[in-house]
Length: 139
Image 1 (cartoon, rainbow, N blue to C red):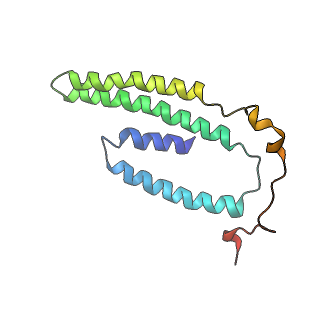
Image 2: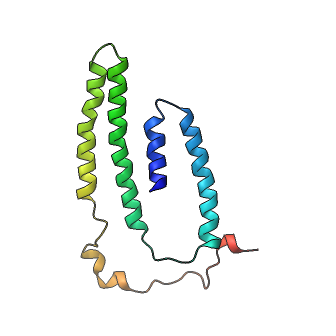
Image 3: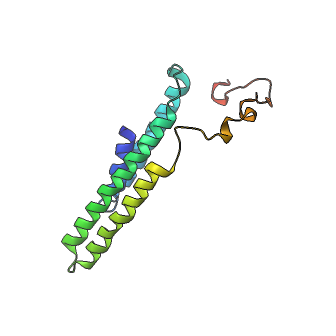
C-alpha cells in the first residue's frame, strides 16, 4: 500500500511540481533493486496473495485519480479567468466514476468460469526442461 500511495502522490502532484516525477522514479528504482534482492535471497517462501494485493493497489490508484481530478479542477478554477476550464475538468469526474464502477463490477478475478474448470484445465502440464535453474542464483 505504501508503493500505491507513492505512485498516487507522484501522479497527483506531477502537474504542479514536475521534479516529483524524478524523485518518484529514483524511489521506485531503488525499491526495485532492494526488493529484487530480498525476494530472491532473504525472504522465505510465502503463500501467493498477489491477486488480492494487485487489485487493491489498482483500486487505490483509481481512487487517487479522483483526488487528481479534484485538485486540477481547483487549480483551474483558481488560476483561470473564466469558469469554463474548471468546469470541463470537473466533468471528467463523471467519466472517472463510470470507469471506477465498471472496474469494480465488470472484471471477475476472484472466481473462475465453468469453462476454466473443465477436465482439460486440470491435466498435468508437460515440462519442456528436466530442471529449473534461476539465473540469479547461478555462480
